[in-house]
Image (cartoon, one colour):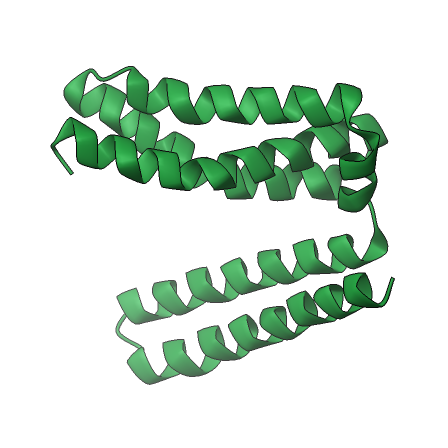
Length: 148
């Protein structure tokens, strides 16, 4: 990913994550709930990390300004002036969806750690089971949101 246009295209595609994450952070701060804030930071971390990497390796500020700006704009917009979007992030179904996301990430990290230590079969069993449990929790959140 050394060509500037390729990197910019990837960051533009990932800006959806920073917008969504920023909106969750704005809703969480305004609603005084920690789960949307943590979830928003989880979603926004990969694009911002890629932007920091572009800045450190190539000195390209554009790669960092795009995700950080979209994150801040979404957080401020939802936190200050978008009550319907904010309400959506604070629903019970969305909370279940967020918890499922964290469980899936934990399962993936656990599987990767076990794989790195050489326990290939155990990494698939333990990491996969945790990931599937998180996916079911995520799905229950989607079901709750659909029924509302």
